[in-house]
Amino acid sequence: MITHVVAFKYKTTVNADLRKEIAHRLLALGDTSGVIRSVTGGLEQSPEGKGKGFHQVFVMKFNLWEDLQFYMLYDQSHQQFMELIGDLTEDVQVWDFQDFEF
Image (cartoon, rainbow, N blue to C red; front, top):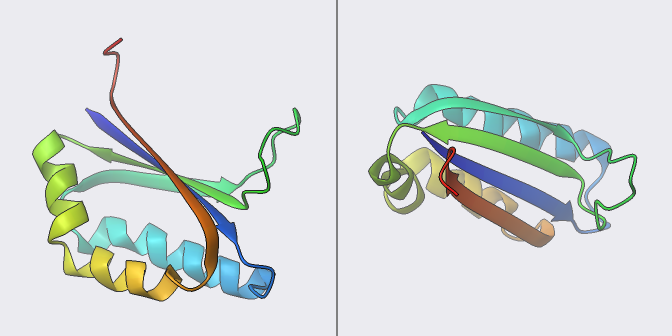
């Protein structure tokens, strides 16, 4: 199983309602992409205070590296989502790993 973690830090002009809309659109990718096994996410609320200003974090699961690659490069729903958030984010961080491979 491949885990894809994405964190968004929004520009100060992006209000809470727009952040919620973005979250709902990202979660909907689980229904439209065909290669996402599961998707979840929420507000960054680390009690350790190490969130570095990021607002939302999402976790997606894929069966294979090839599924993730298809999603990133060819999935039209993902491409449209990327266009939506492109001008709204100050920073984006992404981590990808194969579960239990150390």
